[in-house]
Length: 471
Image 1: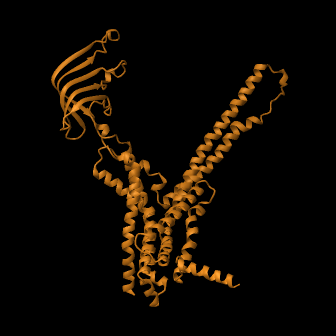
Image 2: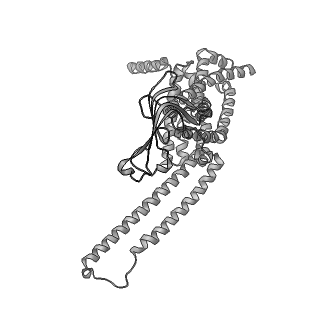
Image 3: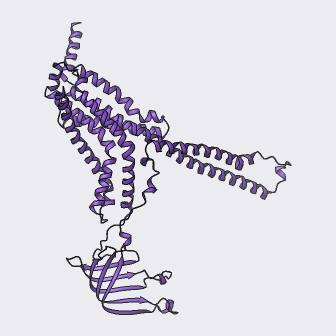
């Protein structure tokens, strides 16, 4: 039996590793295609991009692992059935549950590990990934000054280069508009300092903090905004130079990290204990807010409607202007009441949505582990029934089952968020639908049912046709 168990584990672990790697790669490529514009052109190091892709890959495990288990189980038992190994095992007196025994133990271990990963590792990974992705998305594009185009990416400067030599350092026909003089920042009327040079050299400083321009054969035009007749005559000074060095500060291009504490309150960064604690606290605040809203609205608006005047006033005796004033006051009061209701309604809806997300996330951590177990019991017997291994039929079948599982998950989560279903009903909807399917396939595989063989259905219809003709 030990030899059989080792053989079953070896037959399953290989396809599982392969399918998990393929699934993670496909989902990772989808992420890259979505965020490609935020990643390229910003001068990010391979270390930063590698860290981001690693964090993203780990966050994709809850999506890829159930699919990999489903596909690997279909492939494993499809191969065993196709090569008649499953039939030999059954002929030796082994039942299908006993053949599946070592893999069931492995799947239980994987499911428990999936829950531990989802509860303890995934929140930390989500924190790291979201913080790093936020920093990358707000980072400015890398410095790239093109020929004959004004470049305004450096704060306080507008730069135009006529042409570059092939070394990408030698530049010609340089024009720099300098807007950095703090004494002239309040003035209006255009550029106060312009630098023109026939040619120069452009390079980065050793610490990458400055763009250093060594300019040659040029002029500096400086407007004299402090002159009393500036607005009338616009005087300026002109200085010629043979060589001049200009340092342009690139600190705004540097990739910097945001404090991760800003992201820690997000529900995806919390474990079950933290989710329960924050959900309970928010529910208590939500209940108090509703009570406070009712009291404030009643006191501010509703009670005014029931105020009884000390003396009845004949409407016909009121002047026209007084009637207009009363109507305007009533309209304003109604408008203010509606705004008060709308503002509180938006606030309460937002709080309620945050509470629901936390409660849903708790169930997601358990449903992820159960999905791994459930999809194995769909894939293994289904592979034994269809008797096809490899990456052909199993990929098609597993894709259909996974799409069904994914659609049911989305429907359940949205229904729970819209409160058309309770949270347990919505989050466990895929399990409720697929569990009977897994039990049915397991039963049929144990009974060696020819569920997907054309001959079986052809024989059934032939017998049915013969009965009708004989009658």
